[in-house]
Image 1 (cartoon, rainbow, N blue to C red):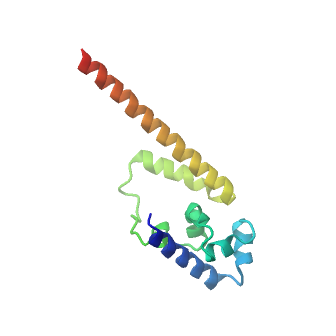
Image 2: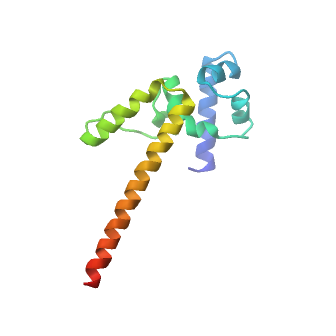
Image 3: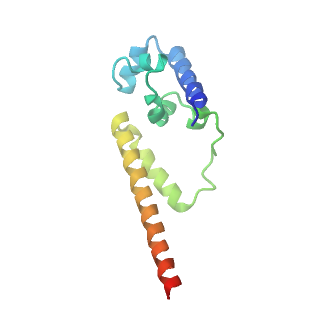
Length: 133
């Protein structure tokens, strides 16, 4: 993601906050984020909003794709059964506090990446053994 993209996302989020909240503090309280977080976003001191895109988009009832200015498929008809199942399980985490949901997302990403790397390593080892035979 380029600096320009991050800046555009920042501006979009800040306009939503300005439209719907009396103050930055009101938004921070509702989202369960520390005081002065939005102020740091405004001053360009932090881009922590990037880790909160799912929570922010849910709060404003818009898709993450809208925040990113990217079209994201709206229906799940193209998803495999496994993808639909994982998505369904993940969506049940919507009631978790933002920090816990972020930790869950990070754990899932890490776990999936480890499995993918492990499978790739195993496949490479098998190929190596076959070529030596």
